[in-house]
Length: 125
Image 1 (cartoon, rainbow, N blue to C red):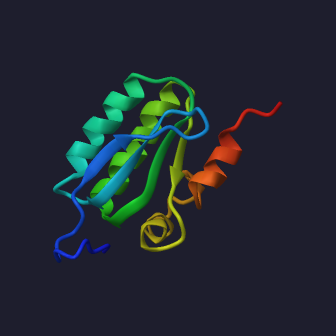
Image 2: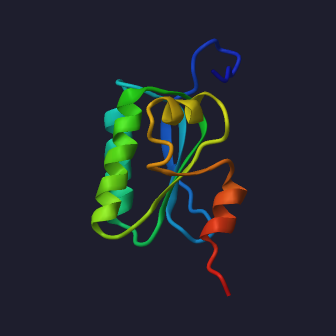
């Protein structure tokens, strides 16, 4: 958990943050049973208002539980209905490990960094 000096976990937030022209969001704080519904609503709204590949940046997530994983799997399914991809930025560490332990790392398109995602999403010329 990142500590801001207060001893409390960082406040949960979802903010618009495109990557290489692809729409997306950055998630901050902890994604658990208490915040999963907020994440789901934010993703639904952002996905509905955009087109093409969609990026979820988890580099600022301190904790991710199974309810957060479920939200991301659901977002992937929603995007797939319109033949859109979900790109997840999750550097090596506890959050990335959750995807591996859950056995869904191969189901998601995972990137180690925003730069890696940007390079992959940038149109080839």
